[in-house]
Amino acid sequence: QVQLVESGGGLVQAGGSLRLSCAASGRTFSNYVMGWFRQAPGKEREFVAAITWNGGNTVYADSEKGRFTISKDNAKTMVYLQIYSLKPEDTAVYYCAAASQGREIYIANPSDYDYWGQGTHVTVSS
Image (cartoon, rainbow, N blue to C red; front, side, top):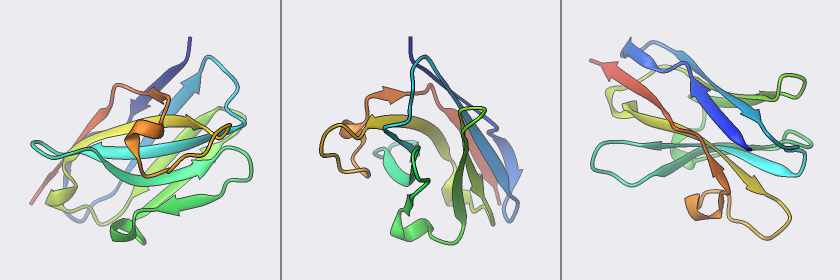
């Protein structure tokens, strides 16, 4: 059974930083793209960043380049999202997701992801 379990969210002040973690288990993810998405109250789920398990190639949403860093630890099958200079508008539930590369996918499209975590809440106070 595939499980993606996020952690690391919480309440932080604007300007601070957070590292979100995603523990992946239940299958081999070597041919997968691991993505982070977020969903603010009343808004659609939006793409933040993604990384290929093989090769570690990264992609970021244009709006988030520079403040977000996605990384992974193969040995621990963990994926991380480091967020710097947090803003109140970063307040959202952050989700980890996995998409198989065995087909053509658009990494920014939530519908192309096969597995999702339950999310971790990030609240940024001004």
